[in-house]
Length: 88
Image (cartoon, rainbow, N blue to C red):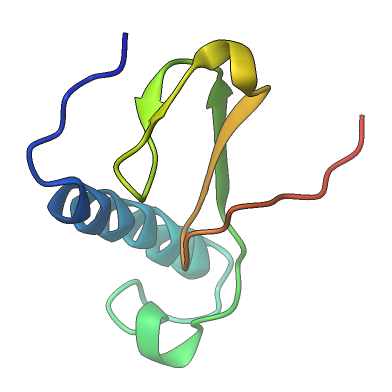
């Protein structure tokens, strides 16, 4: 069963902030810039994508998605995407 989210946009903003923090740390580890400067000085790289196994969830439009309808849950650090090309 999908987890009820009272304010899905707030939750997405909080999740996006956490993903950007991970991306900023990666930019620092790669030597691009400090983590504090990463959002401004290195907004496009490194690319960070987080994948998880399927589970029920509420999508960005507030509609319930069943785990049986998807293969993976994927989030990127910079923007929400509805489609994702990948290979095995």
